[in-house]
Length: 454
Ligand code: UDX
Ligand code: UDX
Image (cartoon, rainbow, N blue to C red; front, side):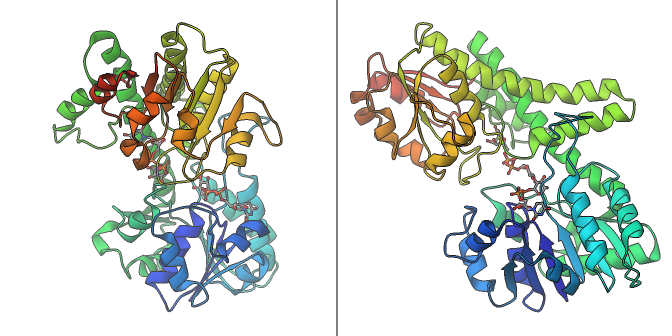
């Protein structure tokens, strides 16, 4: 069997590497139109940082795992084609700011129709609006090259979280495969099930109709993000009342119906998926004439925007209502620990707010390159003398009036805060946007320390 995947990103790369590792008899080719990205996948420095991924790629690469820019050749040779291209939020026209931009999905479908001479199973890996499979089917049918190639479109959304992609892929809670409820659809589903069945127990492989699979991915992300916005809304109330949001989360999480996960109050959720997928869900609801449902989910995003703004506003307020020309050290820039991904990272918004208040912002992140930090905040090629990047947390904090912890990197838990305190202006402030620091200890050192909801 030959598999290819179009899109060598945070989803396509790790997913295909694990399939290749677990199924040595299947030839897996990952293709991308971005030549630099493919070169990186073929090098010693992979384009994405994921714990455990280097070993997986090194074992399978050159054996049955290949990275290439020859999209057409890979499609022509494959039995199964995964589509894992990006589906960003539309920035123009109808649905701008909310709907998914499906231009890459459509162009991939056209290419598949053009170059295929044998029948293919096409697997939607990208998160997409419900009914996208129908659009892909129509494009395939209208553009087939007359070779009699038949196509079956499946939806197989990926639930991995960044930073834990490899363990999530090795041991998924579930694999979801949706297909057309026809004999041909069932056969295609069975083929894809046989790929995952090499390492995923059968009871964790769920098969559904196409629309249920497409919708389940959006709904899973919406529910996860909703829990974070719910606890973050309570964090504001905790700050007003003297309750401690971590104690509240612990107390409610012991109820087995609520459960303890995803109740960590924070400066806000980030990442490429949550906001995009909820906006997409909102847009779907509106297009199907369900404005109340749309408004309900939209509020999960508004609450998250509020939480990010609330954090930077608190910094300004605490520093006697002005941060102009004060040095503020921002620790962490990735949207969560153990990844170099910065898409929709709350750090971007916090840094922009502080720059708008004319602070001197110095960012340190253990994995995100300096150029990425500058271009995320300012735009590609732009510079601002008030924004710089430090090579360590200590360097960032030296001479600062305040520290803001924005990503929960483990190394921030073991910093020598006495040394840091001694290098700062007084009073020295610390704002922990991830509730990882021991506030009592920091206060004993002399810090004016604030957490989220405590
Ligand atoms: C993306 C989406 O963000 C996510 O919603 C979806 O579920 C899966 O795809 P990710 O892998 O993180 O997730 O995206 P990204 O890192 O941007 O990778 C997409 C890749 O597709 C890029 O490397 C891009 O160059 C490539 N691509 C895009 C193509 O090869 N051809 C195209 O036509 C468009
Ligand atoms: C998410 C989903 O978890 C995953 O199933 C889906 O496939 C893609 O989207 P990801 O965005 O990689 O994965 O990371 P996740 O761990 O879900 O965190 C998202 C954001 O929420 C991060 O900014 C994180 O810091 C934040 N978060 C998470 C909280 O603020 N509190 C929590 O309790 C959990």
